[in-house]
Image 1 (cartoon, rainbow, N blue to C red):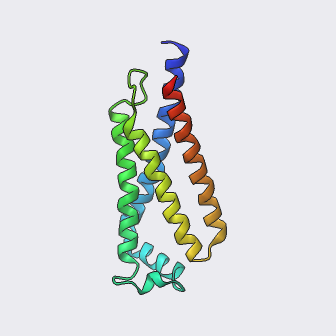
Image 2 (image 1 turned 120 degrees about the vertical axis):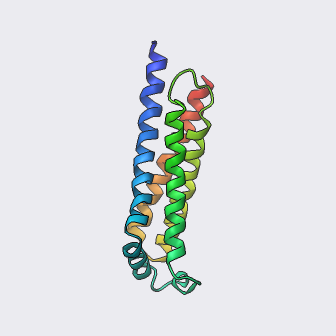
Length: 144
């Protein structure tokens, strides 16, 4: 195995595992503690229009949990398909997972801005920016 092969494994696999962990555990928590999360989000968004929508915060919590779960599934399948190996020329699931993560961070950041939680919204900007940099770097690396 050459340096480039080891580099690809050392870059892709930790990224896939990290996003699998972050979104998998977040999704799992949304459903294992559903009522607690609904209560938390109801309090967080109490001064916004979101709590007045039909169903209250329950559909939002479920939607976020499902979206996070889908990102985790994308990364899990990418690992199972061995997209981290040098023989994989086009790691599409990893790419889609990173793009979906970017949209998730934007959506979560938007929600936190609505709730006037500016500090945590700013943190999500950094997650978004890092995810975009990872995506751009991986695409550039594939062209080599």
